[in-house]
Amino acid sequence: QVQLMESGGGLVQAGGSLRLSCATSGIIFRIFTMGWYRQAPGEQRELVADITGGGSTNYADSVRGRFTISRDNAKSTVYLQMNSLKPEDTAVYYCHTVGTAFQNYWGQGTQVTVSS
Image (cartoon, rainbow, N blue to C red; front, side, top):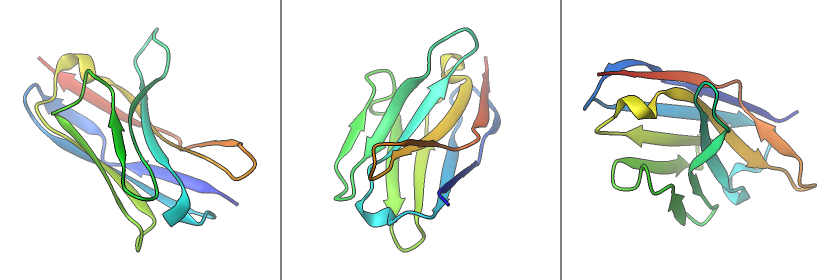
């Protein structure tokens, strides 16, 4: 059974930092591309960043230079370091991966709120 569990969200002032974690089980973590998505109220879910099994990264233009995605294959965990946070970063952040049969797996989400 595949499980993705996010943690690390919270309330922070603009300019502050948060580190999100996504612990996984039930997958051969080291070969899977892992992604972080976010969804603000009334908005569509959007890709924030992803990282391949080989460590190649991709970022949305809105977060490039402020956010860093990384992974620890020994811990089957992916991270999102968020710096210089802005009120527009407020959203529920979701961990995501695609299985070997192209099924989508999502975590339950963690709320990030940035106050101005």
